[in-house]
Image (cartoon, rainbow, N blue to C red; front, side, top):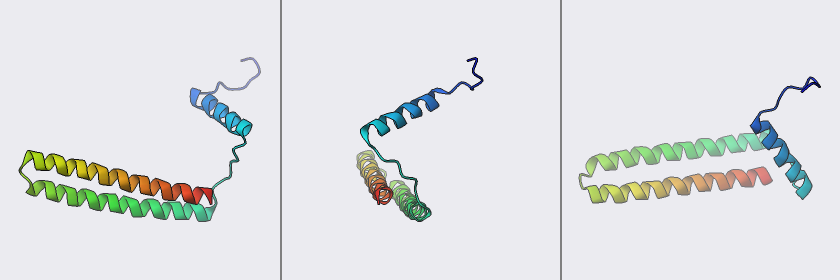
Length: 99
């Protein structure tokens, strides 16, 4: 490149293409306000605490359970609960961003 511009990474090129695609389809980009950032941080902290609580309870239950079949069902239940909490958190964050 003889015009003096530095080379762009693949990520930068991909982001430019996505921004152009969004502009072409009419997607409006609004920066997140300080109030929204604070609300999102609060939601993340709340769900981080809930997930940590679930992990502690799960580990405690596993220590008391010697049966492999029961442990497997407890693991599946724990994964479902983590996924539910993560989905709930992401939904609330997206709702705030759209507001």
